[in-house]
Length: 193
Image (cartoon, rainbow, N blue to C red; front, side, top):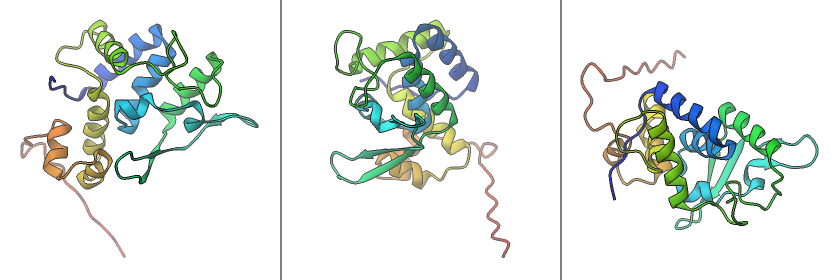
């Protein structure tokens, strides 16, 4: 297995979105959902429409996605932000998917697209966008982790999301092995009681 890193440059993320927007709303949603939630590709591909969308009166996207861990059995919540909601709404309006259908349904059958197909989608979009380096399905969750960390989310929270054993493992995973003194974030803890 090859090591892939996160997309650290916002312009690269936007370039991939532009390519995917022209290609397929389904593929764009896969990318946007992955980089905004940190879900593993297996979790993304197992999603059903009713996991993220409320059918019926006032059809709309759900605010939180709940995933049950296969090993732990615990339920984890993932916030579906505005970027996800916009792409989800477009996708649902363009399809005739039912509540129990896979969200990322294959065009060949009623199953979800395969991991290999998801890999090809991401890899080819990055290539078309002119992004060098190794890109794969793990790039989605690594991109989420990298940008969440850069925006001040504690490594302990990311460690829990990714089910890592240590903060060092999480930092390596999101591509932050070595931090210059100039890159270190200043954290202002001000309870101001």
